[in-house]
Image 1 (spheres, rainbow, N blue to C red):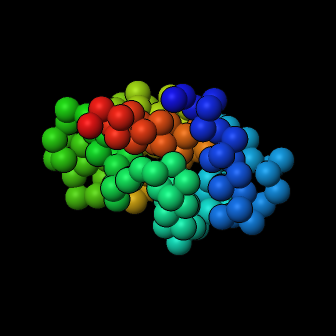
Image 2 (image 1 turned 120 degrees about the vertical axis):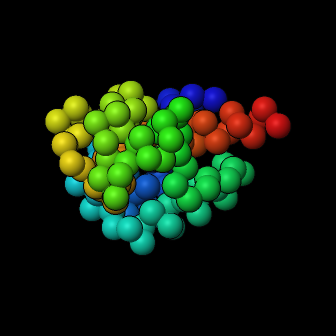
Image 3 (image 1 turned 30 degrees about the vertical axis):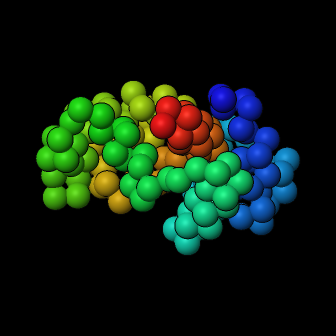
Length: 133
């Protein structure tokens, strides 16, 4: 399963959760900046994705996967993402514009980076993990 395969369903769910027209939801669109998502919307979005695709998406999964081999301390210190952490996020989320990764970025700002494509990739990775079990 790949991004293109899950995109139509993800697009439909995103449009429904955010109360926008499906035509307004593009793969590269930021959930927060472009589509107006709020933190409460992420809970609904994750719930619906889990139900639709029969997967589990643990809280903080994107940050955990992006961190890779970095320890929590190497990734962020006192809520601020380290330089190594920023590089890990850039590598993990190449769909996000490099200019969106700011020095001294707070870990709480990571969700502002999420695009529709990020969500599609999250779904495909969750499906892959489920299949591997």
